[in-house]
Length: 305
Image (tube, rainbow, N blue to C red; front, side, top):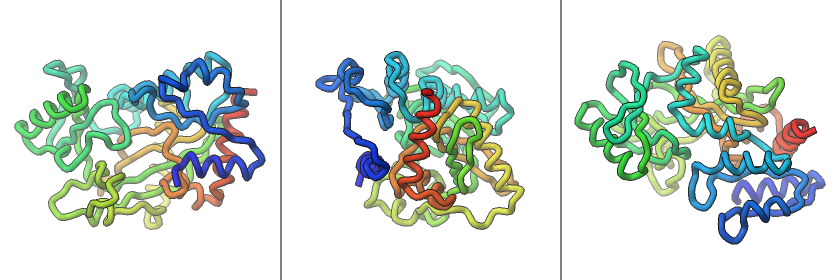
């Protein structure tokens, strides 16, 4: 079942009268959306007319026409989507993030002094798009080849950042004025085939038939001492606030063997499937799936009063 169907079912249980509105940029447009009569929109959009960089514009439009909606506003969606901007903001707020550079067709926009190994990915894609076993590079030759691949395949600047070996930890956050960091979730990458980088590429996250997908799983973290767990929670909360996320969001981090926490990226409006990490964290915190959707609705409504 898709997350939209699960959310529809939860809203019905809560006494609402939900309906679907699918924006396609052609037959169902923003103009028609303004006339849909909704009291509140659960914003699950990830793209508009096939362009996944336009989700921020939909949020901005909903604000212009004064229809309340769930999740990140245009600022949060813009700041989180451009990973280089997000990382500069993290640096400003003293939130540890891997050193990085950005490059686009021979032009370097920003560069720290970075050292191999490096991971190279599109600067603005989400959902692990553009990330696979070839993303981690150990030489100048591999780096140049991967940068060229990103430019040609995605017509996007390449984000080149130091690869942090460590545990992949997700912090789901719920709330606005006093946001709650839900129990931490780990994506266990330890069973990936020998010789492959420990990264959450597309095969790990979405390709159900791959060995990588079958041997990786997410689960609540149970073996962290409280000091490290607090550092993870505090770091995530700082990143959530720095990028102006609201209602709900997920911060992806790496924890290395020294106990250092690095923010990899921030995710406004993360996937709300009952099987996904956000709902998993909410369940561990005592929220049923219906409770979780109710809470997100409540948070969005409170902002519009």
